[in-house]
Length: 250
Image (cartoon, rainbow, N blue to C red):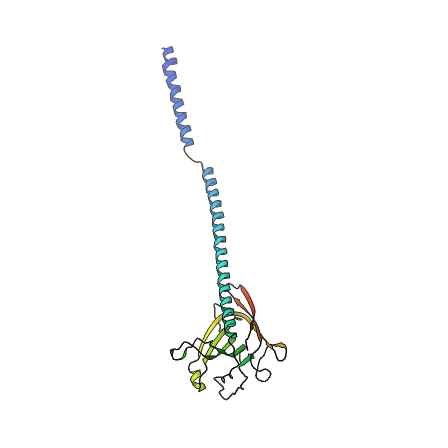
């Protein structure tokens, strides 16, 4: 009896214990402890944070690059328009009188006029341009002589723009008689509402000097050279400046 208990029954008991131990060990290795779960979540959160930061930096860089490109396009477009039209300035006839003062008379050589800080206008440049108009009379292909004016004025108050913003306004008159007919066909449109500054200088070949003004009382004809500078501002506040000089053919 004793040998039987010490033999098969005893071995069976130990085999049962080994089996329970194996099951417990297997169960332990098949699951995660709380520390392991917390550690895994922490690593995952760190990786997501790094990835999100990188994506945000890429998005910001792309936005700044796009904004800089847009600002460059606007600045170049303004400069190109001004250069092209100023090069067409002619002194072949006198300016038409202002729409609000038709009694003003200009002389034969008064074909270019500059006004500074007058009636709320920072600067206004008015001149005659040959084939420089967008208005084509009677459906023709040529605009002939037109009177162009560029005015820099304060931009109307807006929530989207700083209070010191300036607007560049272009007006065009077909050179027609009577003058009332010309003013009835005047075209006015804003070139930009986002200027920060604008300045013009004019070279008087007769006097051999640069001046900020050009009027019938002190100058005749058109300037030999014009140099100007404009500064424009993006929506985020970035400012870009552009300067150039224009030679006027006589």
